[in-house]
Amino acid sequence: MKNKIKEIRTKLGMTQEELAAKAGVRRETIVFLEQGKYNPSLGLANDVAKAMGKKIDQLFDLD
Amino acid sequence: MLDIINTNVYMQLTVGQYRNIKIATVVVLALAFSQSFVFKNFFIPVVLLVAGSLLLMYFRRRVKGILADERDYATGGKAALLAIQIYSWIAVLGMLALYSASDLNPYYQPVAMALAFSTTILLLIYAVMFRYYDKFKFSDKKFLFTVIVAVIFLVAAIAAIRTLSGEDDWICKNGQWVKHGNPSFAPPQTECK
Image (tube, rainbow over all chains, first blue to last red; front, top):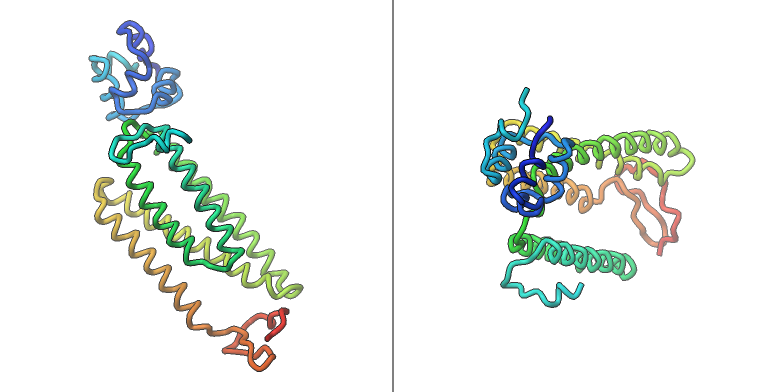
């Protein structure tokens, strides 16, 4: 699944470590998410979106 | 490793400190197990195993940070399933090979049986755990605890009955190996004193 996590995180000036801590996951998971190598559960997608102050559909390409 | 010494047990641990403690615990347990075989004392390693597990559970609760997330659990699930399948195949093929060759060496038979029973128990536990996660809530830890305790108790009871009853075995009597029950294997090759 394509996503804009890296793009938005960079715009917000957040590090992967900070985003991981806010979303309650390990940094490696953020790396995998950004590279599109891991499809998160709805709960995790929501946590990541919340941690960035966005909604799920702003981060993930759901089409 | 110095991190471990500097760690105040009443304070929170970092993920790195917890990992160091885990490695140190495994090293101590490995040493205890190897020495237990040398000195034929199996009580101390069992006590250390329980103590080590409790210690790690205690420290795990004090970790500040994420030790594992949903990706780890998903990866762990896939790896565990694959490991079970690989072990089952190896054990079943090994069991068949050893059982068919038990005429050449009677000691192959108990090894084959151990492989067969271990595979059966492993698949049984997997089936119970799968059923649990398929039917019940993930957060229902009380039920999971009950199932785990019941399975451990059942396995321990069967093992104890098989071990303590001493049926179908060879017993050393007056310098000779004597049949007890109806053992399906040849008497031990070791000297009977």
